[in-house]
Length: 112
Image 1 (cartoon, rainbow, N blue to C red):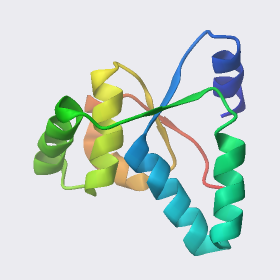
Image 2: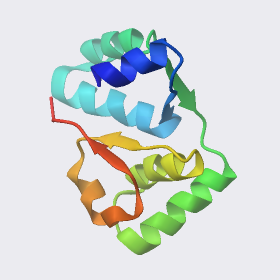
Image 3: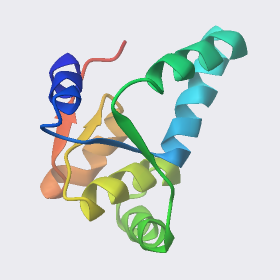
Image 4: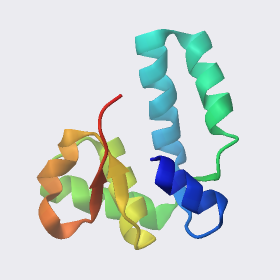
């Protein structure tokens, strides 16, 4: 993750996250560490070179196609669709993405 952030800071690459996945990060942090910590963490993350992308029609449609084939949670499909539409690599530690097989480039990171 550190190398990805450095590359984004130097404008050598872009880091994207769907607004729905941004919300999922908040939810998971809130469940695990409390709302106050979740808000602080997202405030810190918002200072990173990370572009929060709204979900548009094409992303929602692609996510639905992925959901129909791979049967993973819809919000995960939204992340996969964002990567597909932007010809990007999906960065995750979520093992649900293993169900996508080799059709999608995935960079696996360790769980915190």
